[in-house]
Amino acid sequence: MTGPRPGRTLTVVRIEATPGAIEYVRSRGGVLYVWVVTMEYGYHPVFVLEASTDPPGPERDFQRFEREDIVLLLDCGGRDLPESVHLDVSGVIRKRIRAAWNGNTFTPG
Image (tube, rainbow, N blue to C red; front, side, top):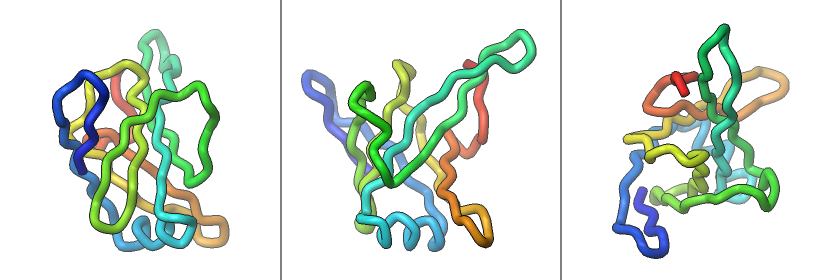
């Protein structure tokens, strides 16, 4: 749950995950990448979190956080860290990992 950044103090982000989300991530290597995507919602920007067990590409600035069972690599897109990242799995036939910022599926940007 902690992730030191070079030149910064030690920070804590709670990783709250369902058992299904933990199993999903562990069965795919144990590392989850989570990053911010900003979009327009009406006239107001909002951001959502995307999540994948595959790296999204080199242009991200990930911070590492750990639980006893998974590693979370989080790119906040220049925002302050959330208090928590909530993880769940959706889908029946095609499962997909989902992440939420402080429990919210989208947040005003």
